[in-house]
Image (cartoon, rainbow, N blue to C red):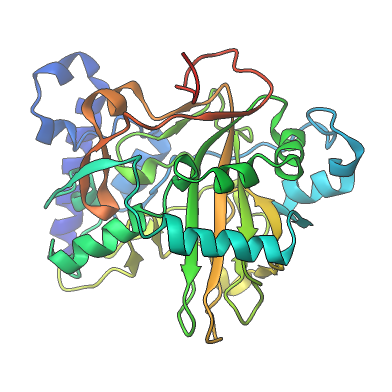
Length: 388
């Protein structure tokens, strides 16, 4: 039975992959069929899924990151924010650098209270969306007997999660912290002089809660498993960074982040159980059991005090440890990219975006805009805030 299931998957995937390459035919296809076309996959991704019968699937765009020719900074910055070549080399070898001081613990507490009391209880103005029963190609890729039903409780939990995303559009205080030179100037030495802010998130790990499972991302193909949200000119170079800011102390007892150093150099597939009677060890489509020898690896905890931040590549396999204390661990992050990178595709703006792991469709991007953090935008790929 399992062999037949794997064979059917491979044949089905071949059909949709080849149909996806025939772009001239897409205009005559129904939306349901187009939702199953992996138009953003490369051959490595297709071949891995095909030859394993769908038991190994990349949930983000496969690429390998080349090491730079030198560890010199990509641009000059003021001395207080200068990274040494040793720090830059550490980032390229390990996938992260820091922590660094940003604001006082008192300022971090004030921002946390502002978010909890004034921002997060309100609905985000950025997103408009609808819920959907089916998730297109993702349903075929990740069969899961624990499939969530669209109950009122489920919808409420998703809305709560969505409301934590991109709140820098609704909070000047949050936006101001992302624009601080301590963050922007250090990011510029890794990415270059021209930078955009394209996304932010708020995170809480409540007391006595398990941490976030190991996961890895790059181009954010995981949103709909069809095409990437982040589209750089060269996938083998560093094109974006995540800045993670602790609003409370984040240590080994209170849910700090953890990474497997060096794993940013290669993307790894997920292990998928195609047995109809089996259960996949998946935590949404963006996080799951990665096909990586964790038993042979050494994890590194990144502890940070309230008001500190660190920079990392989401390509590095990362997660968070459990919070064994009685108090919540709070953090915010922002994602910073190069201006030569297109965020979201023209089709996503025109047709509406799809976020499969939240069962969302027709996600409107009409209020989304990138924010120029540094330098200039010579490309015009992205709508900018305050742009006429």
